Image (tube, rainbow, N blue to C red):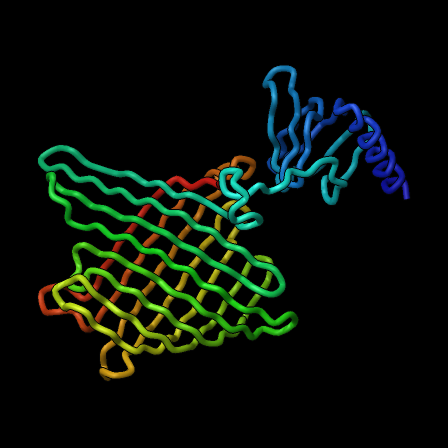
Length: 314
């Protein structure tokens, strides 16, 4: 009863002080650190304090263990929102409003007896509500050694899941375009559709299965134009290991309907580390591999890439 009375008094004091944006508070973080300053702004994701020594300090809400105002103490969660920041879309353009958007940039190289350089760029956008789930990926990869380009590819994919509220079943439709200047097929466009099932869905875990049918078409390479009807059997996994670490994994198996024994298998895994939630900055480490049983002898049936990049929200 005493704790409830003190928490209510603290929150009331904060709300009254918040009208002038000058509430003096002490914040205790999850790691035990304490900060004391004036509240100058609040959003659903962060609290901005004016510290007498450090200046303006931004604190992520999910890192706040306790909040004190004067001599009273209030739990940090849940708290009323004083102000909210609307999503104005990608770079304020109004496009992709309410989508989760991020950019990836990675550059690495070596110089000595030989010189090498790797560049990978990426843009990701995801959206989900009760009726649909969208996923977009654009990635560019280039590898150069001693002045000679040895790998260069661009891939663009878009997938939509049609959800049934209250049911683990869903439908999907998607497609991917890939241009690979160092493959025997040059350009490839693949589209597919089918049904899926959500095996696990919690705050930390999501596991999906997919099965469907589609077609891929290649052109511009040594093979010339080629159309292949395919089946699709896939699995997607998302695991939020901690507040800062997220692991995603996907595998898609595409057996050729017309040519038995011929198939493609695409595997990808990304590990994202959030360094600063208030700024949306982090690190990403990823690996991808595509196995194509139909490739010509000597071309290599595995196409393996690994990437590391800085990521931030847009």
